[in-house]
Image (cartoon, rainbow, N blue to C red; front, top):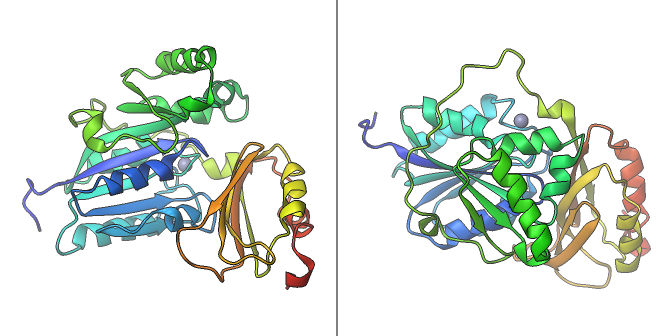
Length: 316
Ligand SMILES: [Zn+2]
């Protein structure tokens, strides 16, 4: 056993689906300095985020198949024990919560486990969507809960909104975020940990267990789509536009007929983008994971929509 002073600092990163958590984790790792264990929780059964985390001088571990904030199961406990037992010890643990998860529920583990020290809970908000999300009858409560015990809020994608929308987003957040430390960021220009000010121990304390625990698996559904083939670019544009509004997020890697390499597809609400994959893996075909509200249409229907975008010569 290590001495009590050898506690490992834990940073928990939260934020709703599509807020920019993975980009921020990469920024933290790129700013370097410490050998980190990065634990990534994706809500779906395929862990896309871990694949999007750049290589670093530490380890990236995945926690799939559910939200760890409400189902702290054996997989999370096993992973955490491996992190705590590692030699040489990790200098920092970064946990990326799932996009529907409550980061505080994960942070509480660091408060309870004597070998860990909660450094901060950082929650990201997408300036272009946060007001609509907070007002949304289906997801508003989930989003609000994510900010309740944040130490710092990163109001991200400020470049995508005009000043009026920015002030609206900021004032809504100030109303629900008690510590009121908001840092404005734009896509791709995230602050390093050292730019967030001194890490003070979190002001919040662990709760006693709630009588009726939340279960994000009841409120949200995931959908996985895997195919060996490749998409037709034009057909994919049409298929993505036809996806139902209950699908809040879709991301993963795909290939296009007649093109080498693979692309990363990101869709948040109805806005999607493609970028070149940096992982270098080319032959994995199509692997996408989506998250939607509980009334998301069945997987067979969503599969059929995307199947229409498969390039005919590549269908398998
Ligand atoms: Zn949860």
